[in-house]
Length: 206
Image 1: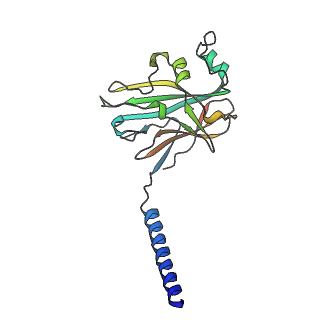
Image 2: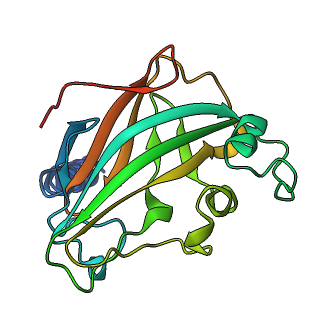
Image 3: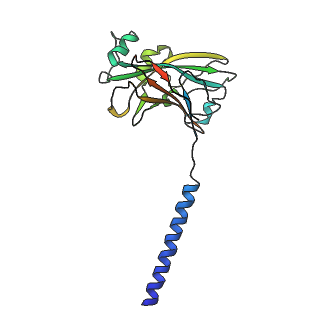
């Protein structure tokens, strides 16, 4: 019986050692995605970095944030002349973050930007692109959730965000970051809403 117990202990130790070796191997070989952080008004060259699919082909595309504004739902409708004909099912929204982006395309004839994936990350929450409100502030977008710029052009427009999961809070003074690409580099543009509800730059960190 004593020899059997020794054998069982030895087998257990070997199994434990194999598990530890496996955990170390997984942790040392886990894929890590580098991050780059930029400031408001600073051009971010996407250089092929994308949100979901590499066929977005963002080589030649650059993006920057020109400003941002925190609005109530009614203020948002009034700003874009939609108070008389508001969209259905959106009257429970408390806060809309209106972000003005500028995009530049140099030499790319078939790339595009997947705007629906352009989320805003806060300290412990996120704001997501709202397609219904996008149709309100950018009716020429015709409901498209992706956009392509003509080659060698620059274009700016506003993108509306709402809190995910029904959460809501005052964004004044909050450190926010627009996630403009996820793979193979996560690129973020940082900004903070100042008391006058416009975005102010933060320093770049890479």
